[in-house]
Image (cartoon, rainbow, N blue to C red; front, side, top):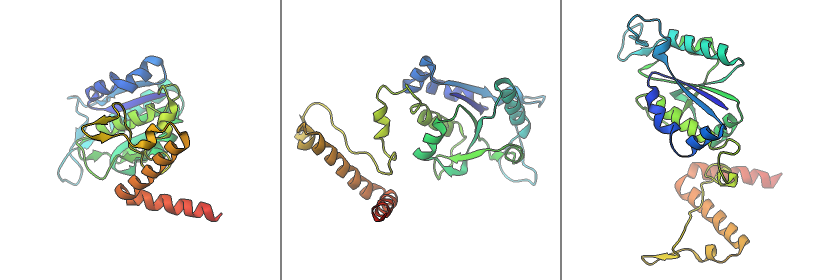
Length: 237
């Protein structure tokens, strides 16, 4: 997979690509990640990539010209058609299902929103998938882009040493994950549940499944109701 990131602040991604699972994925060749500075593509004589909005109002707007230039240069260089993603609080909420779909793509092109917004003609000229990481506003799309990159890269073949670890994560089947324990068996009077110490695989599986159901019911009623409705429908078929 190739991931190109368009941003005015490429230094934000230095920690992401030099740490943990993403760094391992880069070293193994599972992914290429390139952060492109939009200031290198602007034709503004002062190097600006933003300007005041037509019609007045507070804030600045990311100009279309540097985005167009960057997109055109990259598509010409790489060939093909990337999945274009604009990180914006006005987009669809990022879900694990969407992450799974994106992990099957060969080329992602991420545009980090910044300032008040991006010139709307960027979204009019080319097809962009607009994605949000939550109902709140950040200073820019760099942190959401890093979130998306991390979520996608860990699902690429060969990145995780144990792929089943990802299969049992929260949200993969609509439920939250179960609690986990490691050594010692007891600390400050708190013991590991007996089921996990039993060595009985079915008993452990059932305990974890019950914990997932209860956690989801308590913490995320929205997920719980959707899961229960879906499985109730399946039973009727």
